[in-house]
Image (cartoon, rainbow, N blue to C red; front, top):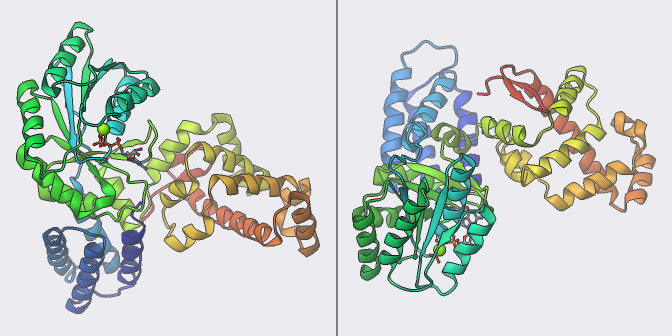
Length: 443
Ligand SMILES: Nc1nc2c(ncn2[C@@H]2O[C@H](COP(=O)(O)OP(=O)(O)OP(=O)(O)O)[C@@H](O)[C@H]2O)c(=O)[nH]1
Ligand SMILES: [Mg+2]
């Protein structure tokens, strides 16, 4: 997520942090760099312009402050403004009526049906009973797709095959009422916003059923196009929020940064995978930190908590404290991380993991398997004291596992980097990450 823009901010901040004094010149230079980074990430032009203007004005204010680290204050200004731009606080769904109605609208292929399933799954897990309604009668496989999604989420689907979408929605809601469901999710057909007829149709659905939530589902990969279509839908429908999908891809960040400012509607969720659990609450603070390269430690902690074994975590913490964390522990940890989703996704959330470090540490599931194989061909002593692994040992290990010596070198380097990183993190108190020691503040 946000690879490119994050890299740019990291480099901007590197020079800003080092500033001993804030002057007009370095304020203007930095402002220009920030504007370029935002525009290159496909952020809306006027959003970028006003963002930079505010940052510039506030930075002027720090010129007079006799602070020890003026550069750090500058960074803080950018951070605060980014959080403000993204909407400041988490905006939850507002589901007050019974059944509450959620209408999903958006362009073709944006991810409405997938998001319907993810929302249903999420609501179901929070104890609500949900019904999904298949109101896309235009694409032949659409109903079947929602039924499949419903099966995965174990949420029932109301469908009539073809027919009038408005009538189907109404009868679906009636059904939910008779079943005493808490929430009904209406999955509508994808539209091209140029298509007046289709827009009128979704407007008539919205007018007739008066949804609690009208969520615009936008493909986060499409940058400013997502913002433009959000605007068009916003003019046609009383949107209550946005779901930004496909943020696991190489989203440049333009949509995430601009949509709220342009439409005035909050992003409520982001899609982070094709799977049912790939939906995260949009937290402006966390996303700002990720965009700006400060890492999203809270998310890692949460993900880790979901999969890490409590006893094992304590064990790891002890080992970290005593600095006896070895390659066997590394292996166990890799196995557990595998459960958390792709390694690169996880590592990209870590603070200080700039893109270069990320590339060095980047691993896919296959590589995790190879890494296990390499560690398995080491002796116990080698695993505990990797520093003894010299050239001839490397050759032997390589023969044992069928991976090249270069790969073994890379693994050992990775391990020592990871250990260093953990040691650094271990020094930070307050935040508990199971299996990885304690954390404190980052920036
Ligand atoms: N990687 C990734 N893929 C996603 C995400 N959300 C949706 N997709 C994929 O995007 C494609 C389109 O998703 P759908 O849910 O069918 O989109 P839709 O808006 O219902 O499309 P129409 O019904 O044709 O308008 C599918 O291949 C999904 O798996 C996401 O958050 N991440
Ligand atoms: Mg669909």
